[in-house]
Image (cartoon, rainbow, N blue to C red; front, side):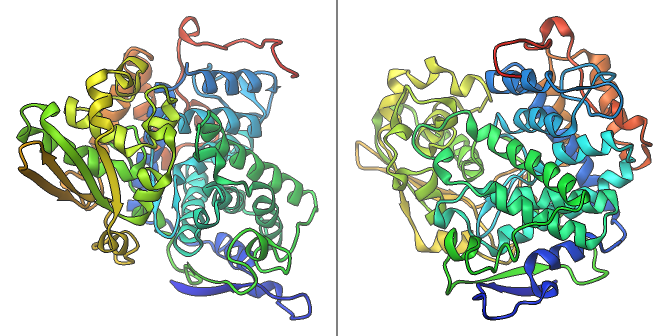
Length: 503
């Protein structure tokens, strides 16, 4: 890996195209390296993971509405599948990416990578799969594209913090989709460079989608970035250019949306000929909640064994990282994070609520744990309001540790009882993390798929999809249209075109 310095260049100071971050990423995207077997296997795991959470969310309102919009964009010949619908019905790829991306993101339950910023790089998969189906690409073409998309997003997340400047993390997603498409389609470096710059330009947004009364846009935002990535590549393929240099320009994103004219960032990228392995740094979720809560849910399961009566608790303090404290903890100063009437999208960004329910129940469920009646339970509200977070510099240091073996996303939890006794424990890594007590393997991804799709799809459809996807590297263009999970029409909301909107 080579570290690249990225800073603002005044217009009078020349910055050659080859020295721009977007061009360097485009050059990496068009470098035809071999894909390592463990990378291929992890890509298959993540496609299974995406399908799991998408089908589990298939009839939730945001997902059904995204699907209903896509049904207005049918294709007779070239097109892509959408989750739930029959495999032989095709739709415009950017809209298929919209529907499928929303389904994948709705439950906040797929893969994650945290570094200088945070991300869900599995959000790249719906966009690349839709284009692969549309343009007749093979399973191996898709694998190569996804290896690039993960590489771009993970390394941007390592080097450029967005949330510090109240920008949504999808600003690193549109560009990774564009780069991944460039690899998958075998495009020239110049076209990929222009497409990536366009994608950056149109996907910067504020973090208000993850603040206060969090709405369904949290699920739509990555799907929008994927859709924009596809459209950016399409325009670039037709000869259109982009604002340039998009990162380093005098009036560009670093200068006015991130650190400002004096800022400097260090972004790592593979050297020419170096394998693309970034997906191996990422990890999925065992529990349907914000990633920083994964280890704390596991920790709550352990600590509850030492508590006989939850009403005997005086206070619970989570000593944790800056990120956890200020994003999902009491440091966010969001009253909604303590509100029993808050939306599911807000509750899964409240570690106080999550820890209380996990402590009481000893289990976590993607539906039951967020049900309104569960959030409003009086004993839960009492316990919930006794929980607070504090930033601990040591946990912040561990959160930003560059050595993966030392990185930590957990906390030290101090439970003080009314009689003055104290129960204390800590956990750095979730059990399912690659360095956790029970790292997720292929069998875990398959079990997650079976659990989340049970009662929604037939056993034969379950077996069909799992058998096919595990043979991804050998799939031809025709097979790619079967890389979808179908739901019986009688059970699928919004399965026919309607006239509720404009389309």
